[in-house]
Image (cartoon, rainbow, N blue to C red):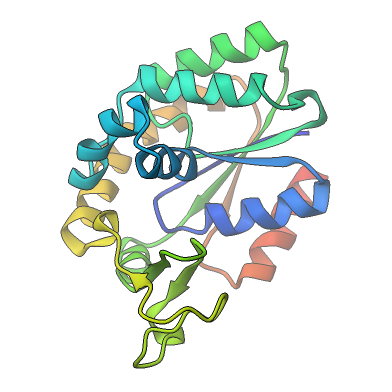
Length: 213
């Protein structure tokens, strides 16, 4: 099973991808996680992407495409995967089409999660990243010592540059301008399921499972 998850930043794609990855025993490929790892490791791609990500702009299509293709090739993609965060532009659609053609991947499932802009802004600006275990937590779950609820480390939960209000709003504006055409591009090629991403997590999961079945 190959699943492509669409949706604005903060709509819950990553959360749902992790749940579905465990349910179907398939790999979750998050371009955001791949990029952040590359930036942290200071790889060539990471260095090239760092300034772009912190401005809230999109990383160049060719870099993302190469990263996605290499990730698929280096895993047993025939067993299935969940792709989260790609494609985001019409150019990336062409890149993904060629990748799928080369790897003989046919008839993936496209799931789109929608959400109100202000809900997304609130979600992203209130989340923190633990620099010790890389867990994303909501600020309401932290005490005065900023102790990570996952690993127990203190003073390790920080606000990422791409979760600042101005950057979040810019990312959402970019999403509206560049990703909506992607949905139009694929609606004539595959069956698309559009679901409410602001429902409770378990409800969203059940709705996704229902449309996949």
